[in-house]
Amino acid sequence: MTEHGQAATERVFNFSAGPAVLPMPVLERARDEMLSLPGVGMSVLEISHRSPAFDRILEETLGELRGLLGIGAEYELVLLQGGASLQFSMVPMNLLRGQSAAADYILTGTWGITGAKEARREGAVHVAWDGGSTNYDRLPEPGEVRLSSNPAYVHVTSNETIQGVQWKHDPDVGSAPLVCDCSSDFLSRPIDVAKYGLIYACAQKNAGIAGVTAVIIRKDLLERSTDSLPTMLDYRTHVKNGSRPNTPPVFAVYILGLVCRWLRESMGGLSGIQRHNAMKSRLLYDVIDASGGFYAGHARPDCRSDMNVTFRLPDESLEKEFVKGATARGLMDLKGHRSVGGIRASIYNAMPVAGVEALRDYMVEFQRSRRA
Ligand SMILES: *Cc1c(COP(=O)(O)O)cnc(C)c1O
Image (cartoon, rainbow, N blue to C red; front, top):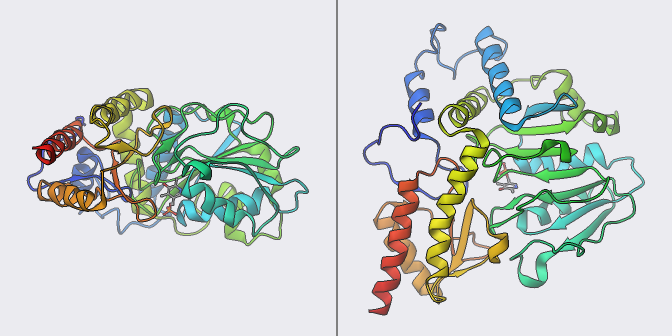
């Protein structure tokens, strides 16, 4: 597979926060195999989830993920449904239920807040840090986080998709199991899995399409799950049945596998894609920094996301005009999330450099035209 495959006519640049742009070679391969998987004679949309064809797809996808992320033998990897949102509930159901300690949440934006809200239904939640006083524009400074005594786990969000704030190093939370919602930067850079108790991520930002969610869990933590849990909400059910206790989202697993393969074969794995992503985000942040305040980045420069570039223009009518002009050029879905406003350019793994360059050129031109 090539970096981004052959250019398809009429394709726009999709800056959506998710579901999001997919690599062209993945789309092309899915198209080519749509009517018949090689050697199978049926579409991947039609095969049984118990067929040898799907055995192979599932095994390959799990193997690719383990290889890319360097997941050690002390960890289970399962593919679930229900999105990252269901993990907001499953994490506390499995790791907090029956524990006397609290679960600590470090709140760096909207998704962390949403996760903490669900955890409160299950047990005691302690907010160890909250970036609300500066409108979630940064990460905690060393020493600002106040953990409870011996927390059941500490939850962080590696990349806040709405605010565009991203951890640049693994959070240090002492001996407590670290739980991370990696939904919007999963597979966009290497991660030291051994520092985490549990990592979860939906696929539809960087890793594929909606319908499948990866969960990586340290084996000893599985012992916390209690038999009071509904069968399908118990991590042990999914581990025991190899991610197949019931019908899995076959097509979403297949696409996830193709994306992993593209990362490994064409993008230099996770360190390769990390360099690629950092280079892309720099193109936009450089314009913001050189704009003399015309473009005002939301996140503090040292906390900026390589995935979601968030910024404002001098007023809302200019922002509307900016989005309208962008759309006319085929730069789609740049409107910021309704809760924070402004502009958000999501430039995940599969966003080609040409797309980011087109946006950069448009930003420079738009500012120039306003000043003229
Ligand atoms: C998109 C997103 C979610 C929600 O994912 P769903 O699959 O829609 O439930 C949660 N957390 C983060 C960080 C996200 O980016």
